[in-house]
Image (tube, rainbow, N blue to C red; front, side, top):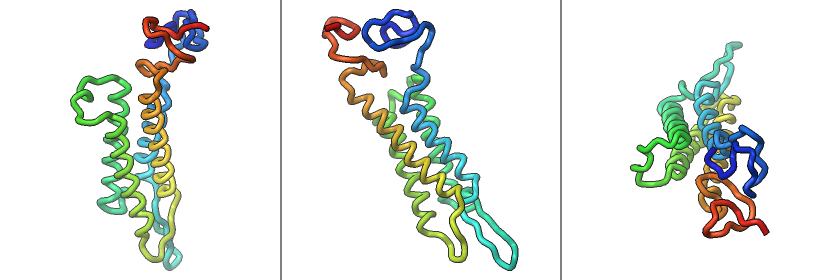
Length: 178
């Protein structure tokens, strides 16, 4: 695994790792940002508004809400693709002018603004449906995922995404035992 001692059964001070278990696939940022992006993708095909007139019920999905609904889908798709590419460590991402987490945050902020605009600009005679609420909730999840990525980058005890416990010795690859 990518962490010292991961998957080898040996504990080099980086925490307890069971034999053959590599938790690198499940980083919090990947699940948070990817899940938030996927939630937003799903929300665009769900009902955002509902109404009834003359005994007939009508609903409209995010996709049917116009250009903003389609932009929410596009921006969420870009965010999901960036998260997957970062998880797969694709070299193309090194050519971006900013860190992937900030690019995903930008996509998330844009999609949130589009959804908020649709939330505030509701047509007369209709009410909110749960797809619009899901889109807003997915925005919060995505923002939390990016927050985890930024915390991971700022953690002095994190090397290559591997968290360690305690201070590390400068010449050792694993935490010093005290």
